[in-house]
Amino acid sequence: MTHLISYSPWTAEEVTRIAPDRQEHAASVVNQLALNFSTWSRDPAVRRAALERFAAVLIEARSRIVDLLVREAGKNRIDAEAEADLLPKKIAISLTAGLARTPQSLSQSLEPHIFWRPRGVAAVLGPFNFPLHLLHGLVIPALAVGCTVIAKPSERCPALGALYGELLATAGLDAVCRVVHGGADVAQALMAQPAITTVAAVGGRTTGLALARALSSRPEVVLALELGGVNPALVLDDADVPTAAVAIAEGAWRMAGQRCTATRHVHVPKSLRSSLIELLIKECQRWVPDGTPNGANGALIDGAAREKFLATYTTAPAGITIIAGDPARRFGKSQCADPLLLEVNDIAARDHALYREEHFGPALIVDTYDDLQECIERMAANPYRLASAVFTASRERFVTLASQLPYGQVNHNRATAGARSDQPFGGLGMAGNARPAALAAGAIFADETVVW
Ligand code: SIN
Picture (cartoon, helix red, strand yellow):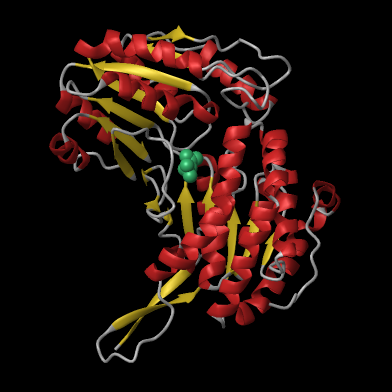
């Protein structure tokens, strides 16, 4: 792949400097990507070679990536390494199983069949919790199917965004994927560009609403949203409670709870309440950070996030009490937070925003039930239905309940947290807009054509 345009990522300073002309700047980058689309979309072999080169560049840059994830995103080393290792794997899966879902060649068959055409220039907006993995998880399928891409990483991680741009350039992909820096105003400037055909974003509900509003007069632009979740774990009376406690704790507290799929609630029968709580209090200790990257847990993304966490949990509503952890506890100068275990003591508290809405941070709420069916109906009525988990010794009981839980994923005897790259990933209800990503992401960035 020849370099069609030179690489000059916008730094945070440049963004500030060009602020009055942001619209114009967005236009020039997007228009260049639109010109480059015809070359990039033409030859799958060229795309494959370029993306494989990018995988090699990412492997080579692993230690820089890990260091920056620690330094800028506050990850502990284990989580930073896990995120760095996902990047080349994403490329491998997108070029194999991902493309197999969106075949792009026409067959000689006389039978009706489908092929997929890339849509054009895609805008990809990433979140701060996995600043590279979730941005890259959309950039790669878009490039693999033949779109050109303008990628906006979270404004809370500009250095990681700049590194991603540099590595794209090293792989010779800067002509087809440009990284831009900035916040909501840059996103809005991109939405206004007529050449953008597709927008894929991971973020909060407010971001999703703003994007939908910005595109309201252009229904032809595909908008794919992953907007987080309020993810429950359900423990049944036949569950292996010690094993469940380990998985639930990891789902709730790892990565300081800054995952869209983090476990926020655990529903437990009254008969198992005390034993589960006793185990969770012990597990909670395992996830206490030490304020360094070598600790059991990383930090919240920044001081503002820590302040928000503090405000949310020190003013817990009547009917929800803290059983373990202290929201005000400090870990040196870091933005780490103490993992919290809370419990619902009054069912009226289930209507409170603390219970109903997604709050990023290491906090898990225990809620007891008498009537399993009533609990299932309550879980099904949760608006933010990204990930759920059921702990039971019986596969049969699991399968029956899974069919009644309208979540993007229903996991058996495993944490809610984590998405498989080799499966579709997306939330139901207000957790998204029915445009799953991960393995299904190619279908966001390409259109089906029927031939017969
Ligand atoms: C998330 O939980 O934030 C994303 C899912 C994942 O890739 O683990």
